[in-house]
Image (cartoon, rainbow, N blue to C red; front, side, top):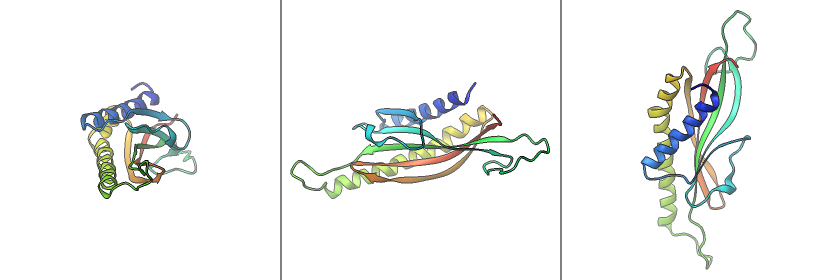
Length: 165
């Protein structure tokens, strides 16, 4: 990959392909500017996003270096990324009745499937992609997103390191 933008595009496209292959595609796939994902664009097909969380220097990946070493060690630029899947969940019907337990359970199980897809993407695909391009990677965690209205989802954070910019 020639640029970091190419790498980020390959990451989001790889995850989109995984979800497609698992027959759980997302209708919207985006690399988001800013520090938060955009929930109001989630449609019935769901949304896959990648966003920049933090960037910092490091001589000991994935940890942050607070002071330059001054000893000639080449520092890395560490980029903390978050990739998530958002989906529409069960809601009240037109009569104001709550969703059935089965519909709520189906949403919960879909979230579990998305969690496993993110984890498997990291270990099966992302590590190979970054290693092939001399970029280091480090797994962070996968966390459920708080349900907002009818939207639920999960987000995985991970770190990649590139030679100092």
